[in-house]
Image 1 (cartoon, rainbow, N blue to C red):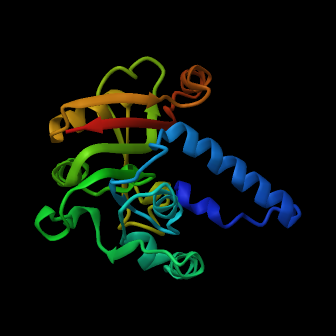
Image 2 (image 1 turned 120 degrees about the vertical axis):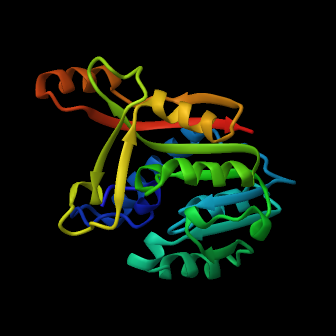
Image 3 (image 1 turned 180 degrees about the horizontal axis):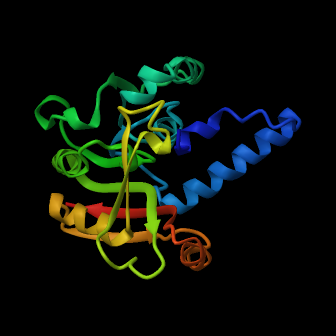
Length: 232
């Protein structure tokens, strides 16, 4: 399964000491939070965290003062469970709301609109990305932060391309989890087509030009994480 940001709340068993693992997890999340560009003060904001999984970003938005936070998930909570989310919710005495809901089923009449919508590590799992983005646009009042794998071909990065593959490259095990990785151009164009009027690239993949060189040598496009801010 391709890693979403939420996966790293529980440190992998690498043989390192627990303190060392915790330090690496904290450093990774500190960097991710910095790159995402979450508003430091969310007082008066409402937040929707799509694909919340363990709830790290939901609880972080609550910590920053958001008046209402709704965490939703379907795939991760179905497949891996939501015990860690519920344990953290209890431990923190959190007021974060949560619903077992798929992004493709978002209904503005049922859940309302949110000042901030988070779509982190989810886009490349979407079965119908344009339809999902249209639903997301309807529930976004002020800002969408989308973080996802983006495609890095050698010479066609500026074209709106999307690589498609089943099951996070493990079709035999996860045929239901259909995935696509867009170029940054494809992602920004899809967001505009879905209804966002202002789309800004906040972060391009690390080692981008090295990865493009690797794609030339291997004749296989590479990928990296990108972040986009979009406003209705």
